[in-house]
Length: 137
Image 1: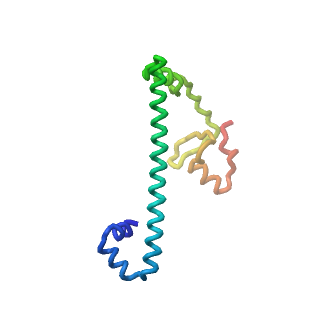
Image 2: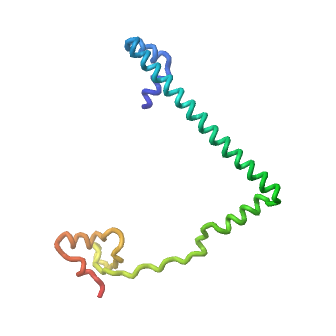
Image 3: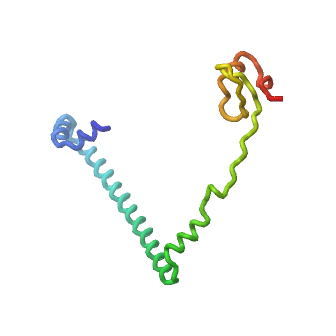
């Protein structure tokens, strides 16, 4: 892609390429480029219209707030009261361990049964052991 951009951006490279391509094919490429450029211009114009309409709405609401005597700070304060506040929510209690196993380094560990299966258990399962044999009773 980078090479193509270098070629298209360099007049000498374009002239060299144009000598190798038949004129009919060059004209077809040119028409396609014109079409793509026109589409891009229309997209840009549409985006500008959308942004202008959005900005117009913002200005309208700013004027409405001003006429009603509401400051932007007041509005922000009210809106921030309803936002998610992590300090207001309780943390979920950790799940109790469901399985107990001896790790590869020889230490005894537990697993809740959620998430990825520990390597030590997976090795035993691959050898034919069943998961129930690791359950904490």
